[in-house]
Amino acid sequence: MPRLLLVEDDAMSRDMLQRRLERRGYEVVLATNGEEAVAAARSAAPDLVLMDLSLPLLDGWSATRALKADAATRAVPVIALTAHAMKGEEEKALAAGCDDFDTKPVDLARLLGKVEALLARRGGA
Image (tube, rainbow, N blue to C red; front, top):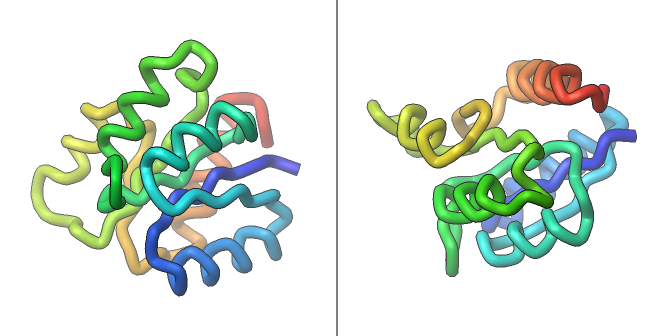
């Protein structure tokens, strides 16, 4: 069962997405800010990270840069999630090290397609 790290500070969004992912057969580890995300990625060894970009304490861009700079977490794919789908946001996320980008509200079928593609590329699906 692939393990996903879901990094989301909004409780309703986090709970809804966690339930939907678990129903699809994923194990979900949670973090509510960027600092927790970096620590959880190191301790839980997720197969993929779903990273909200607007987070307290350490934003998603900075958390992703920290993950990609660490040899222990560098290879873990990161999908950026944001409600701020303004021009340039995707490029900024990819430049920070994210492997893909998706917008909120989450279209689960689209997001699952991205998750499955990255896991398959990594050999985890």
